[in-house]
Structure formats: C-alpha cells, structure tokens
View 1: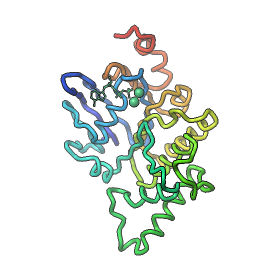
View 2 (view 1 turned 60 degrees about the horizontal axis):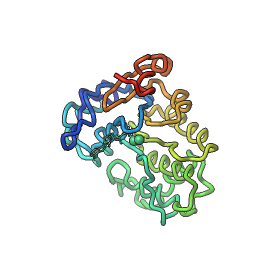
View 3 (view 1 turned 30 degrees about the vertical axis):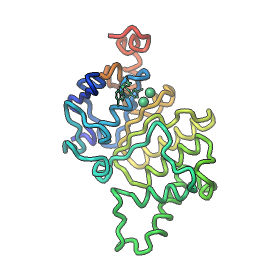
Length: 249
Ligand code: ADP
Ligand code: MG
Ligand code: MG
C-alpha cells in the first residue's frame, strides 16, 4: 500500500465546496510537489490529511490503514508530521528550546522515562542533532523571535525532524525567505528526502525548486486534482498550462 493515499477526498464548508474527489497515492520514500493557484485548496488538502479538518467525502490512509476520525495527535503518533504556512515558533524561547519541546512531544509526547532517565538532557541532545542537520548549531542559544525568516523556517524543519515523522507535509517551506536561503532550504529538504527515505508532500510556489526536488507533481485547481505526473509531463500538459493562464476547465 502507498505510504499515504487519498481516495475521493471532498470537503464542503458551509455549503461551499472546497475540495472535490481528490485521489492519489504517495509511495514510501517518494516526494510529491503540490502546486496550483492561490485558493486552489492546497493547504486545505493538508488540513484534511493532518486531521485538522475531517473530509466530508472519501478517505485518507497511511500504509493502507484508513485514518478515519483519528485526531491530529494520534496521526502524529502514527508518523505524520507537518509544517504550517505561517510560523509556529515560540518567539521568546531560544532556538534549541523550541526544538527540544518538539523532541519531547515526539510521537505524541511519550518520551520514555525508562529509556531516557535524564530526559531533559536526552531531548536537548536530539535537538542539537536536528539543529546540526539544518546548519543552525551556531544559533542554538539565540532567541527564536529574532531570527531571519529563512532561519525560522530551518528551525521549523528541525522541530519537525525532532518528532521523527515518516510522512511529512511541508506547506510553502520557502515562502517569504530571502533569496540566499532558498537554495539552502532546498538542499535541506533534498537531504531529508534522499538520505532518510521519508515520504514528503510539499506545497511550494518556487517552481524551479519544486521541479528540481520532486519525483512527481500534483496540480490542484478549484479544489480538484487536475494532474499528477512527473515534472516534465505535468509542465507539458495543456490542461495544466491553461489552468495557470486562468482559462481552465
Ligand atoms: P491554497 O492553500 O491552495 O492557497 P486554501 O486551501 O487555503 O488554498 O483555500 C482553498 C479555498 O478554501 C479558498 O477559497 C479559501 O477561501 C477556502 N477556505 C479555506 N479554509 C476555509 C474555511 N475554514 N472556511 C471557508 N472557506 C475556507
Ligand atoms: Mg495559498
Ligand atoms: Mg496555502
């Protein structure tokens, strides 16, 4: 079974149809980019996968098991991790404290006292390892609120990695970051994908980044999945081209 599978997912909110009949699978270790115009339903799709919203139709499954009404924290415990389009840091805490909190919440908040009798130290060690992965060791003691946009995004990725997810949803991880940080974040995400074999869904508007990183691209438009294919095939698809020109289907 695919690591993540959506089957006929639909969502109506107050009479408005936000998602309609979205079906696709993501294989273990695969990275799929999710693109589409603003308001296409990309973030809402992530919300239905992470459990923030219940789809009104269809099912979301991990490893062939339908998630049904499973709440957010149980999905996280099952290995589902996500970042948000807007920052979710505690600005008054240091960088390492933010990541340490995420490490303690790992898989639903069950850092075993038996395995980690000195759990504060163990969580700090995990946090420092994750900060090293995103190249932020020198800023471990800095206040999170004072970081550049790009560095905040790196901290958020370190926090995500500290929870050890097997399926990752990244919502615009490069939104608003300085141009120098785009290739840095891109390399971090590429390593997450290639070296750890994690399954990744990524919404991102930097098309050159998306096309360079992903195995396949899913195109959302008006709440529907317009296409899902290799970057080359999707970019050559006339339906996709017309959707982006606003003359769509
Ligand atoms: P994207 O991430 O692709 O830019 P969103 O998923 O944020 O798009 O939004 C898709 C559509 O759903 C938009 O038209 C938005 O206004 C609408 N929408 C999102 N959340 C809600 C909600 N809670 N209630 C009503 N409409 C919503
Ligand atoms: Mg948007
Ligand atoms: Mg969005």
